[in-house]
Amino acid sequence: MAICDLCNTPGMGAIVKAQDMSAAVRDGFNPFKEGLVPDLLEMMGLGGSSYDSWRVEAINGRLSQSDWNVCDTCMTKLTPYLL
Image (tube, rainbow, N blue to C red; front, side):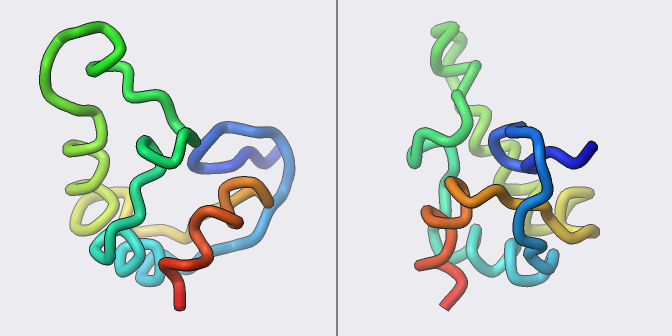
């Protein structure tokens, strides 16, 4: 079964091309600040941010190598960054 690659909601969503997601992240899309993904490092008070590592991976790392399955809720937050 498919799940959203951002919030882990079950189901097939919209497919976002890897290069489009990388561009959206470069342009400021932050699923952690949008409330789509909890920032576990910040929540645990460990300093740093899960977002920082995720951002690097989404732009240049392994997450930038494949297309994304994005649910309707996440797509609503992502769409302004895809224009």
